[in-house]
Image 1: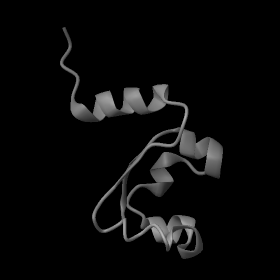
Image 2 (image 1 turned 135 degrees about the horizontal axis):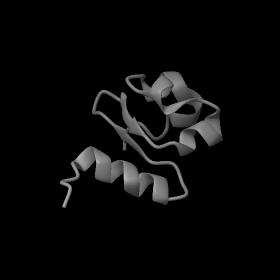
Image 3 (image 1 turned 90 degrees about the vertical axis):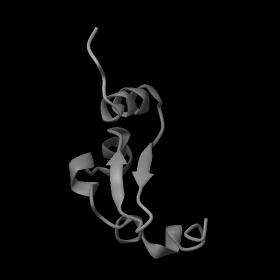
Length: 68
């Protein structure tokens, strides 16, 4: 049986889920986003990786959520 690493498993699970899935670092950088971001925001996941979520989505949208 093929050994599947955590990234591969996360990718499979996030694509099966019909919503947005992201992993954000403590510095608010996007580490992982599923392919549904392309449908919702018109951006390829590769374009988002490493970017700050405030820069991508705007402080107006995320500002009140950042403390959490």
